[in-house]
Image (cartoon, rainbow, N blue to C red; front, side):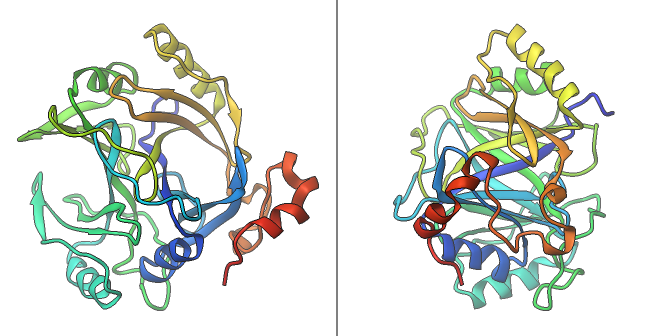
Length: 311
């Protein structure tokens, strides 16, 4: 199992306002702020990581909250929906809670025999709570407002919207080890058996849809999980052999990363489990301090003055 793609590692999206983003994911959805750092390429912008207690791969939604970036548009060539797994019978709780916070909520529906509730975050990012057929046994981050019996367990899946799914599907099946599970209309569900959770990718074929525009309310990239950087580099060779351009290994402090754009236009990352989020602060204190990449530590005072104040 360890030499395979182990489902999703994290998903990274864009927000317009750091405080609003922080409040929604911690106070409304009840996620833990696992890490507060900055964008490696733009240290005047935060990089938030939200997840379960440990920041386990497969639970981590991260954000670049670029202040005032404006509204983006989801479309072809993007991940266009993020789905969280929640316990059976909890959708009623979540509808009531989201509506109490005036969150836009859609109609309950069923997809591949699983009940789901669609909604959107303050930037319009499309989110879904799904009650999976097979109960998700991961330990959630629980709060006084969002107890464990209803709390989100982590990712269930993500949806990629594409003009033609074939080339992307080939990456998933021939390189990443996924298989086609089922089809409903123009939605194709792929799963990996290497892990039991965060192991679903839906491809939505939309030949006439408009391309997306990356800004607030859109997904920047999706990251697939591997056990370590040895496995990661084996996948790098396979991706290069398929004729795709891929970056060298990049140290992101909490994991190592490779990036490539799959044929449908979605930015893919392959990220490692090691070394994890406790490398620079203990488990009990995750997310409590501003952690800077090593190269930016000498400029801490300047960076802290530029970053928005959080309450």
